[in-house]
Length: 211
Image (cartoon, rainbow, N blue to C red; front, side, top):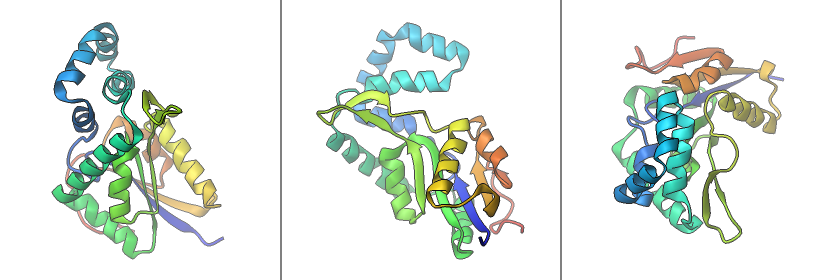
């Protein structure tokens, strides 16, 4: 099989300029409700903060903000936030890398712990080949349970999702050259998995990646 190149991009502060998770939760729940809900769950919030467990803290915030919200309403909020992200623009340096990969005919996928409701909107706008993001669970009445549907798409889960995505395209890992772009410890596993890891912790030195 001919070797194929895949560019995997993290979302918050890698493709975009800012974190988008907290604004989304505040947008859906409202700041007052989110704050009150976290206060009621003070012991869980404090424990997560002490352990610096971002996944646990996000799980509590998601439960507070999204529980009981209809799928239609959640998608509406996602469309609004996704559109705002597009309007505000992406990180210029990383966006230029995305364009470069597209010009080379590479496959492009977003692999993100952010919520699929708005990452999908941005992915469609960018015409990427795939979006792998954190999904939320809905009940039989199509209302969000406030829980995640599966694992949060960060850390090792990013490699699990990326590997499954390659398999869905019948691409063997040995036949793929992977570029990965990330900015935090939550991206470390994906960056370690890549042939060309790029830590986006400061403006990238050049537009076109070195070959």
